Length: 465
Image (tube, rainbow, N blue to C red; front, side):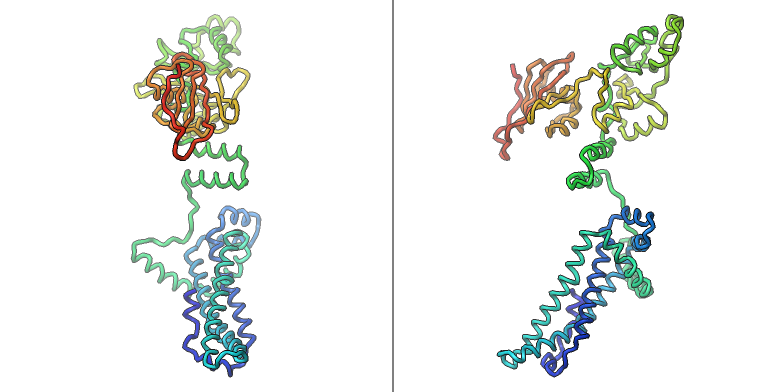
């Protein structure tokens, strides 16, 4: 716009336009310059907004326009300098060519009106400026910009060739101007870049994923799996493992029939084996190794004879790196060790996969799983993690505890009993239904009917007896 205003010949005697014949070619040329200005604006914005992956897909499919667009994307500094040069040239030419032609037409038209002769030039100039500036803003800038934002890849492909011809024809001048601009940028200690790198953090990808789900470009199930994959690095082994108190393990003196008996009771195929106590796990025994033995071997051998190694990892190991290690080492189970070197629990490949796709239940799985009672009520296992509860119900529990049971214990400040009830400040009500040892077996989570912005329904801790 500044180029256009600078180009308008305001010093010209507009009254002389009355004697100047109307030049329709000048007006036609002005329209062409207006469209060319819009094309440069659209090319610049579309290349900035286009998703490079889609351009690359089109190039791999053999579209020559996409190849030219990729070349422009690899030298963005030169590309945008070329676009700015084109916009400036069109704006200056539009002001120099179209304004006098429109002014001459208006002076002739206003000359036959009732306006005083002395006002005709001033009125003609004001109307001319309004028309040219309006068309330049709307047709030459705003409309192309909005079109390029709405259909970035399509516009970029359509304009790739003609814009490429322009940049090639004026490349020496563009390089000179771009070099001078880069020199000014370096004066403020900023290094210019020639290519826009498509690098995103996990948080940025999660936001893009949420927007894609809202727009319906991916399914809810796919969004959940991808979101879980992005969050693997935020989950440590302690959060996903089977805790020590739930481990089904055997001493290294156990017989093979005892292995089969424990496998039948639990449904587990990989059983940790310890020496003296559970803090000294020496490996694991696979049920398959027992089933292939002859009856005579079942009597003569012990689990110590069939031990497989089990890698040990700290509780703090994140699942993203752990999954990579397990795949590299072809290990289906790892021993999770606490800060004191004792056994904290065991984590299997299935546990990691469940973080991606949710709970995987089979005919041997006796674990409790969350279930919805109605639209405002859920029954969840006490071992459910707080982040899983948040994804299921929307309730975000405070505290340091990993599990829902632990969070309730933190709030009540004592061991749990059936019937214990805790109400959050937001009005959510948690009730202990059953116990498994000293922890909650099942907990009912009930959402408030309506939580006002002023928190009128907020509550506190309640023993519930």
